[in-house]
Image 1 (tube, rainbow, N blue to C red):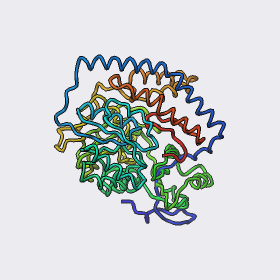
Image 2 (spheres, rainbow, N blue to C red):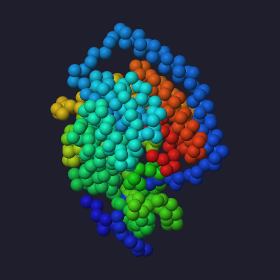
Image 3 (spheres, helix red, strand yellow):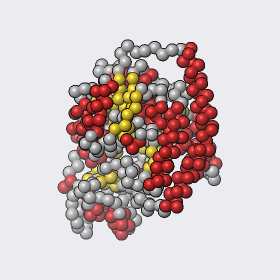
Image 4 (cartoon, rainbow, N blue to C red):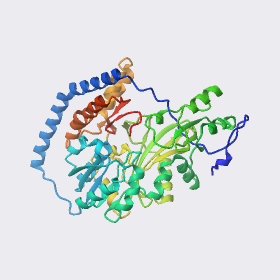
Length: 474
């Protein structure tokens, strides 16, 4: 068990204290207004350029769908439930909506007022769409309750952003007398979302995690005696940080001055604690788990990367066994995404848990049995895994962009073309084509136009999450 008082003080002295892990790149300064305008205009022009082609494909799919429905009418499900899904702008919410709809259930989709323009609302899997206040608003829980009661919702499945998972857990107290909530409870959400508390919980269950310390002041890192360690360390923000989360700078830096400069550049404080975590070299994996009273219901594991927009299932028995033991030990109900490192000797270490839906859920397309795994209160014979015939998923515009940026490196560009050829676009579905058109030619363009008015600038367009990634954004 890691104890804050066990921290080693470096030879030059300094305070002992808790430390924490993960760290991040120093954010770039805000671009000029001219650069922001050019950035948005070019992005809008590129989307406009491909609109005729996308429109033609979607029109053909709609026409084919009309003809096929005439030949094979849908059989209603006598046990149909009404399912409320949040996070409507995200692809994973669309995927769950399609899975529940395919199983005969009625789907209500919601999103914050800020994203009223979500393209997924046009899916034929969505019966009704609502907007609600931001999760941080005191009116959030009341808005959810009003929708639950008005629509006769049976089950609420939050598809949370990192910022909203805690508030959905709090709202579950208000909703539990009206519907079931498939989300980690209020008592556990903070424990799982906090990288330090998560590591402690895993250790108590005898599960492997890197050495992890909580920090609330830069001096705690500078006082740490790295000379006694076999591996380097990294810093991570406990609170979700869309920009710095991709930084994996190894500590200590080549010189004490460089270490001090880097650590002091980070917004570490009592109010914004970080963790100092042992960096274990190896292959990184991500997982999605749907859990009910500690039972693993839906599961997949994929190779991971810093900016994850490609998913292909892999079999890693040690990782699945780790997830099973942890979920059973805490009797978890809800959805959880675990990240792992597999070291060269084959040992697996969990590096963090995000108690919410993972985008790897897109691998379960056309598997309506996933709905039963979420909704049934009866134990399953085995978890639902992605079908062997399901292709890896990707987001077309992310692949196209990476193809364009690697024109001078043909081998890498060819790899992205192979991804498109061999995989499945995560948003597009021949049976439900409108979301693909509306995300790329309604939702994202309106966000770009909004940014033109506000002149905030953005770092990248995330078609998976359905938003512009911005400094200080959600």
